[in-house]
Image 1: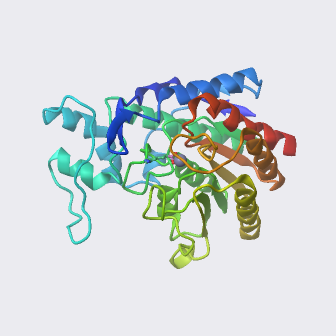
Image 2: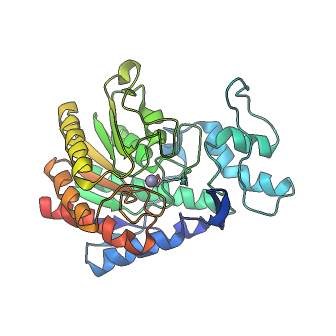
Length: 343
Ligand code: OKP
Ligand code: ZN
């Protein structure tokens, strides 16, 4: 399987995040991609190529223009306001406040942020653009006839909504790739999100559409981030009714329960009639992940990769989360190797 990778992910290198009341080193760190890349190499998964540059037009197909402009200028505005540290939001347009975009950057950042943990740094925008290019390069390879590709994206993307960043995500790489397939002539795309966290951003972007089917297995929002979306009564709206399926699962969920949900999701993808599949590949379902609570073991990733291949669809793997850094390469590449075994 072909891997797409860019060194530019290094430009997102936040120092700290607020976790359980303390500032701790960011879980989402450059080493995550380094370890995955190393595993791709040692397992001889296949060729590794650098991405092409697609500019911002494909991003504007799924994200708000004001939001993309904010991402491009936030660091400059943050520094111009006299700050000499990473940028965080601290105020939000919550219930009964107005959703009007303030002029001051401290207000604007709260308008566009969905959570507090993600530091915006001098290189965030550059890294986010490179991650989009990695996903789109994989998408183009598949559109040109490849059966699969691995977009080694970093930073991740599935929490990034139409006009919001957060949860370590800036632009929604998987959503941009899905729109890329549609723009290249595919009529039905499915996105299967296996990250431990609900893909609220992807759901948000396609909620009222029937050309992208979104399904996600994740820790129930009653207990886990992003807390405010991801229940099983969220099935899509308008034309999108029936094209969104969530599998909220209890903390402590083991592989047998998880895999049963995955097989149900797979069945729904087939029923939908998807022509192409995108996997939002988070491996934070691993038992030893430091911020998650599922119980998958490394061999389980191979098992489910094999099942994904049995769906018989051209498949783009888009890297999302996974914070047990030493094992992230084994777990992510196990999925890809399982997929190849299942062909
Ligand atoms: C990004 B991705 C844990 C708080 C978690 C943010 C998690 C973002 C996960 N106490 N806060 O889906 O892997
Ligand atoms: Zn996650």
